[in-house]
Image (tube, rainbow, N blue to C red; front, top):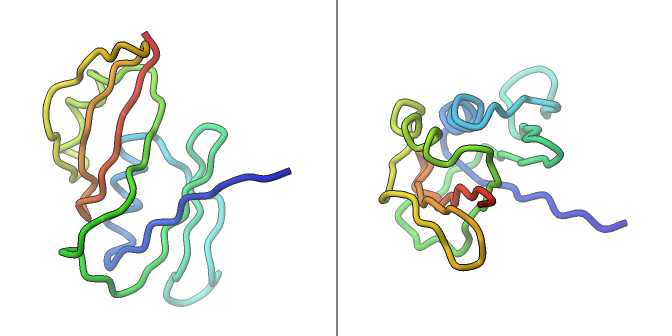
Length: 118
């Protein structure tokens, strides 16, 4: 069986973990190491896992990915993005392929597409 786990490298792991917990209800399922400064956190989002790694990184470099997250209510989440530390890039749009999509940035500026089946 093949699975894919996205891992985001961040200079501020607690801030980014808080964003995904507050906005999407992510739950920490593992961390490394158990004691001392945390290097890796695994977050459960529904039936998926997102990894966060604490490492110095230049947030001004161009990003090369977008994290797409299927949710129940895109518009309801848009109202909570800024309070969770992110930034809304515009209103949601209904796409011809049958999804409502909104684009947001997490606190590190990573693109997150919130999608909802219509």
